[in-house]
Length: 157
Image (cartoon, rainbow, N blue to C red; front, top):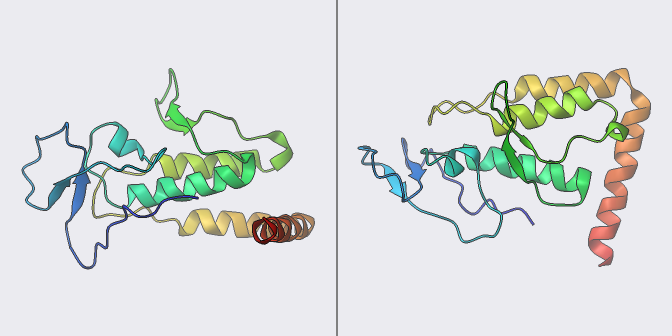
């Protein structure tokens, strides 16, 4: 199960963010020092000691997708060399076909801008997935079957 329990209601507390306790350099009155006790919960900003808001939700979505694809929680690290971007430790499997699209999903969710009050616009990503499924109706059918099997497994255990 993915934990969205540390999510912030940014409408209720405008300008709020969380900051890991080791970093006390923030002067923002709305930054709260916190850690989570849920095993495996993290977001890249938290791991780097930076303030975070919606980043935890994006990491939770990435974790959910990773669990559906690999059957295991997301473990991510900075890529070596080049960009130093965050990426899943396990590569996207070729059997998932649109590997570039899945890699884009993980890249955008795990490397969202550090701006606290400018959430990532996920609409272009959603539209790219919709376009891919419309261009490949057989994959839409396969996806529906896969989700149906997961639903059955969820309720049969």
